[in-house]
Image 1 (cartoon, helix red, strand yellow):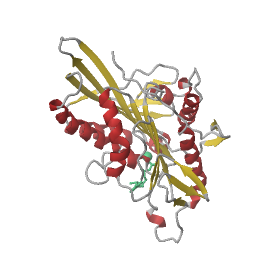
Image 2 (cartoon, helix red, strand yellow):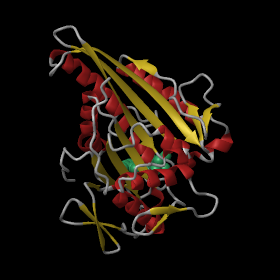
Image 3 (cartoon, helix red, strand yellow):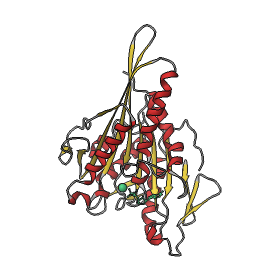
Image 4 (tube, helix red, strand yellow):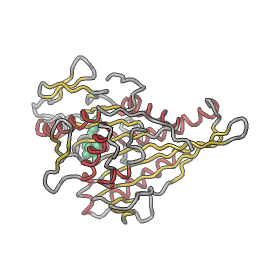
Length: 343
Ligand code: ADP
Ligand code: MG
Protein backbone atom coordinates (compact mmCIF):
# COMPACT_ATOMS: atom_id res chain seq x y z
CA UNK A 1 0.00 0.00 0.00
CA UNK A 2 1.29 3.47 -0.73
CA UNK A 3 0.64 6.84 0.76
CA UNK A 4 -1.15 9.37 -1.39
CA UNK A 5 -0.61 13.01 -0.60
CA UNK A 6 -2.65 14.17 2.35
CA UNK A 7 -3.48 17.38 0.54
CA UNK A 8 -5.47 15.70 -2.16
CA UNK A 9 -9.18 15.96 -1.38
CA UNK A 10 -10.21 13.02 -3.53
CA UNK A 11 -8.69 9.62 -2.90
CA UNK A 12 -9.41 6.53 -4.87
CA UNK A 13 -8.67 3.11 -3.45
CA UNK A 14 -9.25 -0.33 -4.89
CA UNK A 15 -9.57 -3.32 -2.57
CA UNK A 16 -9.43 -6.90 -3.78
CA UNK A 17 -11.42 -9.32 -1.62
CA UNK A 18 -9.99 -12.75 -0.68
CA UNK A 19 -10.85 -15.82 -2.78
CA UNK A 20 -14.36 -17.07 -1.97
CA UNK A 21 -14.41 -20.07 0.38
CA UNK A 22 -16.28 -22.22 -2.14
CA UNK A 23 -13.51 -21.69 -4.70
CA UNK A 24 -10.55 -21.90 -2.38
CA UNK A 25 -9.60 -25.41 -3.58
CA UNK A 26 -9.88 -24.64 -7.26
CA UNK A 27 -6.63 -24.00 -9.12
CA UNK A 28 -7.86 -20.68 -10.42
CA UNK A 29 -5.51 -17.78 -9.73
CA UNK A 30 -6.65 -14.22 -9.19
CA UNK A 31 -7.21 -12.06 -12.26
CA UNK A 32 -5.69 -9.20 -10.29
CA UNK A 33 -1.95 -8.75 -10.59
CA UNK A 34 0.25 -6.43 -8.56
CA UNK A 35 3.05 -4.24 -9.84
CA UNK A 36 6.28 -3.31 -8.03
CA UNK A 37 4.83 0.20 -7.96
CA UNK A 38 2.35 -0.05 -5.07
CA UNK A 39 -0.11 2.29 -6.82
CA UNK A 40 -0.58 0.03 -9.80
CA UNK A 41 -2.65 -3.08 -10.29
CA UNK A 42 -2.78 -5.13 -13.44
CA UNK A 43 -5.79 -6.81 -15.00
CA UNK A 44 -5.48 -8.65 -18.30
CA UNK A 45 -2.03 -7.09 -18.78
CA UNK A 46 -3.53 -3.64 -18.47
CA UNK A 47 -2.19 -1.37 -15.71
CA UNK A 48 -4.56 0.75 -13.59
CA UNK A 49 -3.16 3.44 -11.31
CA UNK A 50 -4.89 4.50 -8.09
CA UNK A 51 -4.03 6.35 -4.90
CA UNK A 52 -4.23 3.08 -2.99
CA UNK A 53 -4.18 -0.49 -4.19
CA UNK A 54 -5.22 -2.87 -1.43
CA UNK A 55 -4.50 -6.58 -1.79
CA UNK A 56 -6.58 -9.23 0.04
CA UNK A 57 -4.02 -9.29 2.86
CA UNK A 58 -4.69 -5.67 3.82
CA UNK A 59 -6.49 -5.58 7.16
CA UNK A 60 -9.53 -3.57 8.25
CA UNK A 61 -7.25 -1.70 10.67
CA UNK A 62 -4.97 -0.64 7.79
CA UNK A 63 -7.90 0.48 5.65
CA UNK A 64 -9.05 2.67 8.51
CA UNK A 65 -5.59 4.07 9.30
CA UNK A 66 -4.69 4.99 5.73
CA UNK A 67 -7.99 5.96 4.17
CA UNK A 68 -10.50 6.90 6.81
CA UNK A 69 -8.60 8.38 9.75
CA UNK A 70 -7.47 11.35 7.62
CA UNK A 71 -11.14 12.02 6.86
CA UNK A 72 -12.03 12.01 10.55
CA UNK A 73 -9.39 14.72 11.05
CA UNK A 74 -10.98 16.80 8.28
CA UNK A 75 -14.45 16.28 9.73
CA UNK A 76 -13.27 17.64 13.04
CA UNK A 77 -11.83 20.70 11.34
CA UNK A 78 -15.26 21.44 9.86
CA UNK A 79 -15.14 19.85 6.42
CA UNK A 80 -17.79 17.58 4.96
CA UNK A 81 -16.48 14.18 4.00
CA UNK A 82 -17.80 11.15 2.20
CA UNK A 83 -16.48 7.62 1.92
CA UNK A 84 -18.23 5.53 -0.73
CA UNK A 85 -17.93 1.77 -1.12
CA UNK A 86 -18.63 0.84 -4.73
CA UNK A 87 -18.55 -2.56 -6.43
CA UNK A 88 -20.27 -5.73 -7.43
CA UNK A 89 -22.28 -7.66 -4.83
CA UNK A 90 -20.08 -9.94 -2.72
CA UNK A 91 -16.86 -7.94 -3.12
CA UNK A 92 -16.72 -6.69 0.48
CA UNK A 93 -18.48 -3.30 0.49
CA UNK A 94 -20.48 -4.00 3.64
CA UNK A 95 -17.53 -5.78 5.24
CA UNK A 96 -15.30 -2.78 4.57
CA UNK A 97 -17.80 -0.17 5.72
CA UNK A 98 -18.74 -2.14 8.83
CA UNK A 99 -22.42 -1.41 8.65
CA UNK A 100 -23.30 -4.86 9.85
CA UNK A 101 -23.63 -4.87 13.63
CA UNK A 102 -22.44 -8.47 13.88
CA UNK A 103 -18.91 -7.21 13.34
CA UNK A 104 -18.41 -4.59 16.02
CA UNK A 105 -15.61 -6.35 17.87
CA UNK A 106 -12.22 -7.70 16.87
CA UNK A 107 -10.07 -7.39 13.79
CA UNK A 108 -12.96 -7.62 11.32
CA UNK A 109 -14.73 -4.49 12.49
CA UNK A 110 -15.22 -2.09 9.65
CA UNK A 111 -15.13 1.63 8.98
CA UNK A 112 -18.24 2.91 10.80
CA UNK A 113 -17.50 1.52 14.29
CA UNK A 114 -13.84 2.51 13.90
CA UNK A 115 -14.77 6.09 13.00
CA UNK A 116 -17.08 6.37 15.99
CA UNK A 117 -14.41 4.97 18.29
CA UNK A 118 -11.86 7.40 16.88
CA UNK A 119 -14.16 10.39 17.32
CA UNK A 120 -14.80 9.56 20.93
CA UNK A 121 -11.21 8.76 21.82
CA UNK A 122 -9.92 11.82 19.98
CA UNK A 123 -12.67 13.85 21.64
CA UNK A 124 -11.11 13.21 25.05
CA UNK A 125 -7.68 14.23 23.80
CA UNK A 126 -8.99 17.42 22.19
CA UNK A 127 -10.35 18.74 25.44
CA UNK A 128 -6.80 19.27 26.69
CA UNK A 129 -5.39 20.29 23.38
CA UNK A 130 -7.58 22.76 21.54
CA UNK A 131 -5.99 24.59 18.66
CA UNK A 132 -6.82 28.13 17.49
CA UNK A 133 -10.17 29.07 18.94
CA UNK A 134 -11.27 26.97 21.86
CA UNK A 135 -14.18 24.63 21.25
CA UNK A 136 -16.85 25.70 23.69
CA UNK A 137 -19.22 22.88 22.96
CA UNK A 138 -19.21 19.89 20.64
CA UNK A 139 -22.34 18.01 19.62
CA UNK A 140 -22.21 14.69 17.83
CA UNK A 141 -25.19 12.92 16.33
CA UNK A 142 -25.81 10.17 13.82
CA UNK A 143 -28.41 9.22 11.27
CA UNK A 144 -28.71 5.96 9.39
CA UNK A 145 -30.84 5.55 6.30
CA UNK A 146 -31.38 3.10 3.50
CA UNK A 147 -32.40 3.88 -0.05
CA UNK A 148 -34.28 1.22 -1.88
CA UNK A 149 -36.22 1.53 -5.09
CA UNK A 150 -35.92 5.34 -5.05
CA UNK A 151 -37.35 5.60 -1.53
CA UNK A 152 -35.61 6.55 1.70
CA UNK A 153 -36.12 4.47 4.85
CA UNK A 154 -35.07 5.90 8.19
CA UNK A 155 -33.40 3.00 9.98
CA UNK A 156 -33.44 4.82 13.32
CA UNK A 157 -37.11 5.78 13.21
CA UNK A 158 -39.81 3.91 15.13
CA UNK A 159 -41.46 2.82 11.96
CA UNK A 160 -38.48 2.09 9.78
CA UNK A 161 -40.42 0.07 7.23
CA UNK A 162 -42.33 3.12 5.98
CA UNK A 163 -40.41 5.25 3.50
CA UNK A 164 -39.81 8.82 4.67
CA UNK A 165 -39.42 10.32 1.25
CA UNK A 166 -39.91 9.38 -2.34
CA UNK A 167 -38.51 10.82 -5.54
CA UNK A 168 -39.52 14.40 -6.21
CA UNK A 169 -39.49 15.51 -2.57
CA UNK A 170 -36.67 17.32 -0.92
CA UNK A 171 -34.78 15.20 1.56
CA UNK A 172 -34.35 16.95 4.88
CA UNK A 173 -32.49 14.20 6.69
CA UNK A 174 -33.30 11.13 8.72
CA UNK A 175 -33.74 11.20 12.49
CA UNK A 176 -30.60 12.31 14.22
CA UNK A 177 -29.66 10.50 17.40
CA UNK A 178 -27.36 12.42 19.72
CA UNK A 179 -24.24 10.50 20.64
CA UNK A 180 -22.33 10.99 23.85
CA UNK A 181 -20.36 7.78 24.12
CA UNK A 182 -19.25 4.74 22.20
CA UNK A 183 -21.92 2.45 23.68
CA UNK A 184 -24.64 4.63 22.19
CA UNK A 185 -22.90 4.31 18.84
CA UNK A 186 -23.06 0.54 19.04
CA UNK A 187 -26.75 0.68 20.01
CA UNK A 188 -27.51 2.82 16.98
CA UNK A 189 -25.60 0.58 14.64
CA UNK A 190 -27.35 -2.47 16.03
CA UNK A 191 -30.79 -0.87 15.80
CA UNK A 192 -30.20 0.34 12.24
CA UNK A 193 -28.71 -2.85 10.87
CA UNK A 194 -31.47 -4.88 12.54
CA UNK A 195 -34.10 -2.72 10.88
CA UNK A 196 -32.30 -3.14 7.60
CA UNK A 197 -32.60 -6.89 7.88
CA UNK A 198 -36.18 -7.24 9.11
CA UNK A 199 -37.68 -5.33 6.22
CA UNK A 200 -40.26 -7.48 4.36
CA UNK A 201 -38.71 -10.41 2.49
CA UNK A 202 -39.36 -8.81 -0.85
CA UNK A 203 -36.85 -6.21 0.22
CA UNK A 204 -34.33 -8.69 1.59
CA UNK A 205 -34.07 -10.50 -1.67
CA UNK A 206 -33.22 -7.12 -3.13
CA UNK A 207 -30.74 -6.09 -0.43
CA UNK A 208 -27.89 -5.86 -2.93
CA UNK A 209 -30.04 -3.23 -4.64
CA UNK A 210 -30.20 -0.95 -1.61
CA UNK A 211 -27.80 1.75 -0.49
CA UNK A 212 -27.09 2.32 3.20
CA UNK A 213 -25.81 5.68 4.46
CA UNK A 214 -24.55 6.24 7.97
CA UNK A 215 -24.00 9.94 8.65
CA UNK A 216 -22.07 11.45 11.53
CA UNK A 217 -22.97 15.08 12.21
CA UNK A 218 -20.59 17.26 14.15
CA UNK A 219 -21.44 20.73 15.42
CA UNK A 220 -18.79 22.77 17.17
CA UNK A 221 -19.54 26.00 18.94
CA UNK A 222 -16.38 28.08 19.16
CA UNK A 223 -16.03 30.98 21.57
CA UNK A 224 -13.12 33.39 21.29
CA UNK A 225 -11.58 35.41 24.09
CA UNK A 226 -14.10 38.25 23.53
CA UNK A 227 -16.92 35.81 24.11
CA UNK A 228 -17.97 35.88 20.44
CA UNK A 229 -19.35 32.60 19.19
CA UNK A 230 -19.22 30.94 15.81
CA UNK A 231 -20.52 27.56 14.76
CA UNK A 232 -18.87 25.03 12.54
CA UNK A 233 -20.95 22.11 11.43
CA UNK A 234 -19.75 19.25 9.32
CA UNK A 235 -20.82 15.77 8.44
CA UNK A 236 -19.32 12.52 7.30
CA UNK A 237 -21.30 10.18 5.09
CA UNK A 238 -20.25 6.57 5.13
CA UNK A 239 -21.96 4.95 2.18
CA UNK A 240 -22.40 1.27 1.40
CA UNK A 241 -23.68 1.37 -2.16
CA UNK A 242 -25.87 -1.20 -3.85
CA UNK A 243 -24.17 -3.85 -6.00
CA UNK A 244 -22.91 -2.28 -9.20
CA UNK A 245 -23.56 -5.33 -11.39
CA UNK A 246 -25.69 -4.42 -14.33
CA UNK A 247 -24.37 -0.88 -14.41
CA UNK A 248 -22.34 -0.64 -17.59
CA UNK A 249 -20.31 2.28 -18.76
CA UNK A 250 -19.40 3.24 -22.26
CA UNK A 251 -17.09 5.78 -23.81
CA UNK A 252 -13.98 7.32 -22.35
CA UNK A 253 -15.94 9.89 -20.38
CA UNK A 254 -17.84 7.21 -18.55
CA UNK A 255 -21.30 8.13 -19.65
CA UNK A 256 -23.51 5.62 -17.93
CA UNK A 257 -25.90 3.81 -20.21
CA UNK A 258 -28.97 2.00 -19.06
CA UNK A 259 -29.15 -1.66 -19.92
CA UNK A 260 -32.46 -3.37 -19.35
CA UNK A 261 -34.66 -3.00 -16.33
CA UNK A 262 -32.18 -3.96 -13.63
CA UNK A 263 -30.24 -0.75 -13.79
CA UNK A 264 -29.75 0.92 -10.50
CA UNK A 265 -30.86 4.49 -10.91
CA UNK A 266 -28.86 5.70 -7.91
CA UNK A 267 -25.51 4.33 -9.07
CA UNK A 268 -25.99 5.69 -12.54
CA UNK A 269 -26.71 9.12 -11.15
CA UNK A 270 -23.65 9.05 -8.89
CA UNK A 271 -21.56 8.36 -11.98
CA UNK A 272 -23.19 11.31 -13.73
CA UNK A 273 -22.72 13.61 -10.72
CA UNK A 274 -19.02 12.73 -10.53
CA UNK A 275 -18.66 13.26 -14.25
CA UNK A 276 -20.38 16.67 -14.13
CA UNK A 277 -18.15 17.67 -11.21
CA UNK A 278 -15.06 16.57 -13.17
CA UNK A 279 -16.08 18.56 -16.21
CA UNK A 280 -16.74 21.65 -14.11
CA UNK A 281 -20.41 21.75 -15.18
CA UNK A 282 -22.47 24.53 -13.64
CA UNK A 283 -25.41 22.21 -13.21
CA UNK A 284 -24.77 18.99 -11.35
CA UNK A 285 -27.60 16.46 -11.85
CA UNK A 286 -28.30 15.78 -8.18
CA UNK A 287 -32.02 15.51 -8.79
CA UNK A 288 -31.72 12.51 -11.07
CA UNK A 289 -32.03 10.08 -8.19
CA UNK A 290 -32.85 9.95 -4.50
CA UNK A 291 -29.30 8.75 -3.75
CA UNK A 292 -27.64 11.71 -5.44
CA UNK A 293 -30.05 14.21 -3.89
CA UNK A 294 -29.43 12.75 -0.43
CA UNK A 295 -25.66 13.03 -0.95
CA UNK A 296 -25.82 16.53 -2.46
CA UNK A 297 -24.42 18.30 0.61
CA UNK A 298 -21.33 16.18 0.73
CA UNK A 299 -20.77 14.95 -2.79
CA UNK A 300 -19.58 18.26 -4.19
CA UNK A 301 -16.36 20.11 -4.87
CA UNK A 302 -16.40 21.48 -1.31
CA UNK A 303 -15.95 18.11 0.29
CA UNK A 304 -13.41 15.40 0.85
CA UNK A 305 -14.18 12.21 -1.00
CA UNK A 306 -12.72 8.76 -0.63
CA UNK A 307 -13.90 6.07 -3.00
CA UNK A 308 -13.35 2.45 -2.06
CA UNK A 309 -13.81 0.36 -5.14
CA UNK A 310 -14.23 -3.28 -4.17
CA UNK A 311 -13.29 -5.99 -6.66
CA UNK A 312 -13.31 -9.77 -6.96
CA UNK A 313 -10.32 -12.01 -7.76
CA UNK A 314 -12.47 -14.40 -9.82
CA UNK A 315 -12.44 -14.72 -13.58
CA UNK A 316 -16.20 -15.13 -13.75
CA UNK A 317 -16.46 -11.60 -12.29
CA UNK A 318 -13.94 -10.07 -14.69
CA UNK A 319 -16.33 -7.87 -16.67
CA UNK A 320 -17.78 -6.42 -13.45
CA UNK A 321 -14.26 -5.93 -12.10
CA UNK A 322 -13.27 -3.98 -15.21
CA UNK A 323 -16.46 -1.94 -14.97
CA UNK A 324 -15.67 -1.07 -11.31
CA UNK A 325 -12.09 -0.13 -12.22
CA UNK A 326 -13.36 2.15 -14.97
CA UNK A 327 -15.77 3.82 -12.55
CA UNK A 328 -12.88 4.37 -10.13
CA UNK A 329 -10.63 5.73 -12.88
CA UNK A 330 -13.25 8.26 -13.89
CA UNK A 331 -13.56 9.44 -10.29
CA UNK A 332 -9.78 9.98 -10.25
CA UNK A 333 -10.25 13.02 -12.47
CA UNK A 334 -12.02 14.96 -9.71
CA UNK A 335 -10.27 18.01 -8.31
CA UNK A 336 -12.10 19.03 -5.16
CA UNK A 337 -11.26 22.14 -3.17
CA UNK A 338 -12.95 21.75 0.20
CA UNK A 339 -14.13 24.65 2.36
CA UNK A 340 -15.04 24.77 6.04
CA UNK A 341 -18.75 25.09 6.78
CA UNK A 342 -18.83 27.90 9.23
CA UNK A 343 -21.99 29.81 10.10
P1 ADP B 1 -20.94 -6.76 -0.51
O1 ADP B 1 -21.45 -5.88 0.58
O2 ADP B 1 -20.02 -6.06 -1.46
O3 ADP B 1 -22.04 -7.47 -1.24
P2 ADP B 1 -19.89 -8.32 1.66
O4 ADP B 1 -19.21 -7.25 2.42
O5 ADP B 1 -21.20 -8.79 2.19
O6 ADP B 1 -20.05 -7.93 0.13
O7 ADP B 1 -18.86 -9.52 1.52
C1 ADP B 1 -19.24 -10.82 1.13
C2 ADP B 1 -18.55 -11.83 2.05
O8 ADP B 1 -17.14 -11.78 1.87
C3 ADP B 1 -18.82 -11.58 3.51
O9 ADP B 1 -19.00 -12.80 4.17
C4 ADP B 1 -17.56 -10.89 3.99
O10 ADP B 1 -17.33 -11.11 5.36
C5 ADP B 1 -16.48 -11.50 3.12
N1 ADP B 1 -15.39 -10.55 2.84
C6 ADP B 1 -15.40 -9.55 1.95
N2 ADP B 1 -14.24 -8.87 1.93
C7 ADP B 1 -13.45 -9.47 2.85
C8 ADP B 1 -12.11 -9.25 3.31
N3 ADP B 1 -11.33 -8.27 2.81
N4 ADP B 1 -11.64 -10.07 4.27
C9 ADP B 1 -12.39 -11.06 4.79
N5 ADP B 1 -13.67 -11.32 4.39
C10 ADP B 1 -14.19 -10.56 3.44
MG1 MG C 1 -23.46 -5.52 1.09
